[in-house]
Image (cartoon, rainbow, N blue to C red; front, side):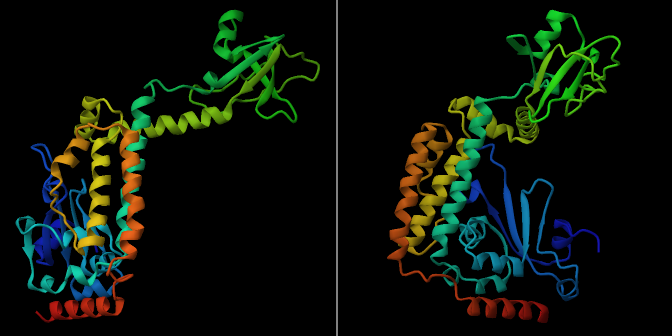
Amino acid sequence: MEMLTIDDIKGNGWLIFETVMGSRAYGLDTPTSDTDIRGVYVLPKALFYSLDYVPQVSNETNDIVYYELRRFIELLSKNNPNIMEMLNVPDHCVLLKHALMGNVKAEMFLSRLCEKTFANYAFTQIKKAYGLEKKFVNPVEKGRKSVLDFCFVRTGKKSMNLSDFLAITGYSQEQLGLSAIPHMRDCYNLYYSANLNCSGVTRTEDANDVCQSNIPKNADPIGLLYFNKDGYSVYCKRYKEYWEWVENRNEERYNTSVAHGKNYDSKNMMHVFRLLLMAREIAIERKVNVHRKDRDFLLSIKQGKYEYDELVEKAEALKNELPSLYESSSLPDEPDLVQVNKLLIEMRSSYYKL
């Protein structure tokens, strides 16, 4: 079959649950917030039993994501934070709810697994925030450096980068030749002569390595060239990552971070604390509080009112508190998978009889 789409699921009436998620469900939305939609669908028998089973479908921007019933229940049984939240959104966020979804009770799935799933997800957000901090502090120039920028020449007792060497001598890189020096990694004897028919340091401007020439055995080198190949490799990776980030970044989030001047993704850090506080509440209250009563505190993080290191320290303290809370909690170690599997079978059987 052709790729299954959001429109296919809605148009065929396979959708059994749909809700608004994200900042609007958390009560953390602002006038410019996106609207995230999540849902659950049931494939017809022919697709469910065939090789064409599709566990998850999203639109191009991932603002809308639907999960097939089996995938939804599977993620619930693993206490996936995003999926656990779907069962606990405020009533005003629910756009569609089939009667069958009334059988899916949050208490059937809540377990001590939430300690790890919520906390681990939170700390991936810290890493994302830190990654953005590095990009803020260390931007990469648009003009891409070449292999030649990572080459250094030693003549006599002096060493200099290749560009300075070429400027002093008046040579062009195409007039130079290289031959490898045994047992000296990325080091080459450097030659210049109109009669040597040298191949140059690189053959093309976009080359990713230096090239060697066929140098006569009796030719004398004019110096030694070192190519910092490892440095060039690290630079290429960083350049690619940085400019892909620039191309794909969320401009609203980026501009927010620029405005508060703290050099980290404050929205990511806000979600760190939302997740950790939710994990704490699950252990104590045995429920997932999606709509946040701590809106002012969380939005103050998003507005950049704290230093990055201060937030990391607070997050570590919250995370370290969780083990004792979960150990003393009355929550089960994990959901009862026999009961969960029975629920899944009953729901699908009932749906196919309708």
